[in-house]
Length: 156
Image 1: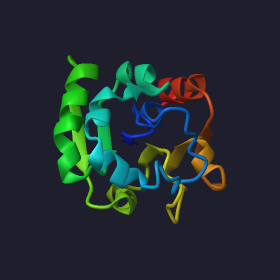
Image 2 (image 1 turned 90 degrees about the horizontal axis):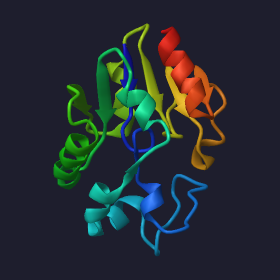
Image 3 (image 1 turned 45 degrees about the vertical axis):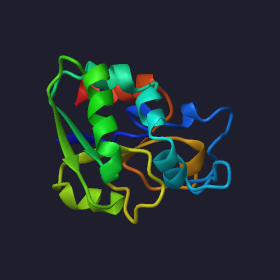
């Protein structure tokens, strides 16, 4: 089974924030953490555009299972965004309490397509490369371009 992270893999929250480049996971936005900023600007969750990987994932011929950590006050926007961008696809969604819980859902042959930079183990993670995760070295696979993900999903 292949699981897909949501924010950073399917939905691009960072483009909703002017010209700020997220070089580190803890990049501040107007003096606030990422979560604090979006909690105060929930409308941005709906306005966020898809990532460059969205169309490849949307067209994936097998079941799409999204595994995501969404704060309770983000979930309505999550579902609205999903209805807008996946209107005719049935998507299974697994909400985790904490982002680090994701690895616990994976069976031996499962993979997670993810951009998070702070897991202890990346042996089952296909890492979407972003500036903030540049220090991860031991991923199952690194993806720099949509075509790489397309080829992997087509072959598997």
